[in-house]
Amino acid sequence: MSLVEPQPLFLSSSGRGRGAHALAILAGPAGLPLFSILLLWAMIRSPFPAVHLYPLFVVLSLGLYLLAGLGWAFGATLVATAVGFVGFFFSSETWARPMYALGAGLVWGIFWVLARFDRKRHLSWNRFHEEWDGLELELSRLNADLESSRSIIEDNRARINAFDRLQLFTDDLIGPYHRDELLQRAQAGLGTMFPKGRVTLHLFPKPDAPDPSDDWGMKVLQWGQPRLLASRTSTTPSWEPGLFICLPVKGRESFLGWIGIESKSTETPLRIHDLRLASIAADLISLALGNTEKYSQTEALAISDELTGIYTRGYFNERLQEEFGKARHNSRPFALVLLDIDHFKKVNDAHGHHMGDEVLRWLARLVTAQARETDFVARYGGEEFVIIMPAARGTDALRFTQRLIKTIAGTPFRWGQKKIKITVSAGVSSLKDEVPSEEELLRRADEALYAAKNAGRNRVCAYAD
Image (cartoon, rainbow, N blue to C red; front, side, top):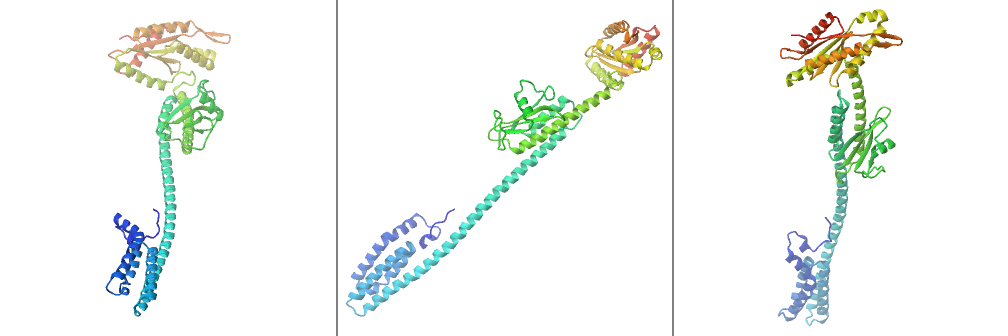
């Protein structure tokens, strides 16, 4: 709001319409000549002595001051002075001359009072104007502080929301995940953290080795640091808001990939705190990938036999329960093969336990090579091995085991100059309607194995009802 110069008192009061403003504008230029002429005519034509109408100049001065301001009241005073001057010197009535002088003095007295009043009014207005300017300056400062406070509040609110999303992102990455599952969770979490951007997560085929067609991967590997760019076509980092963020995913000693975040709209650019947040997320992904590798290694050690490298009996029990349930639920065939090395104790006694361990490793590799991709080979215990054969009928499993036994018997174990003939016995059981559980299926395979040993070894027997 801006201030204007003090207006005549008639216009200072609120509620005046357009007619009042028009009257105030015309009161000075039109009123002074008109009223002066009327008064002079009245003084000349009046039956009373002219000096008796002289006080009407006082009314004229007051009226013009109220309507048009002090300048026009001064004009009325000058006219009254001129009339008084003429009357004082040229009046035929001797007694009227002092009255003219007295009237002129009265008009000047009234004008002096009005001038003093108007001066005080202007001084008051000037003080008010200074105070008003000070208030406007203070208001501007307060508005600036308010906008700054709003900006700080919005920025802090955005930071709090960002760190809340980061906390959820961190919680989502914690867990015994495999690599693919972790990457899916990381991709979804990044999309939640940056709802205004398109997030892509790229991993190198090998550490420090991006795909040759991955131009951004090559750039990120070269830069080695996060960058906020004006656009996807730019390569110059900027601290100003931009439309693209790229940053590396680092391992302990190598780069594993990179993350790209592109704003969906130019109206919602990415800012420097988005870059910091994305950098923290990239570090979390790096740590999670490291934990995933450790988990995979630990899981492999937990389910793999230390000596032979094939699966352990504990993991075999889990898979047997799982595959048996699938076969029963889907009414599919299912078979189990149990193998045992013939006279393995003699190998240990004749050649030592070290040689016996080598035989177990050799047999594990041979059985795994002969098995189908869908089969599951595990060490059952000691010199015993077991094969889970999903979707295999009993007759198919029997023919496979017969070929396997012949292959083992026809492939002597070699160790330096030594050649040792190894044979195995095997038992086969298959899923039938009367088999109530996986334990019964395993018991039947074990019973068929002992039947093969009792029949002379180096052979296979199928469980007979």
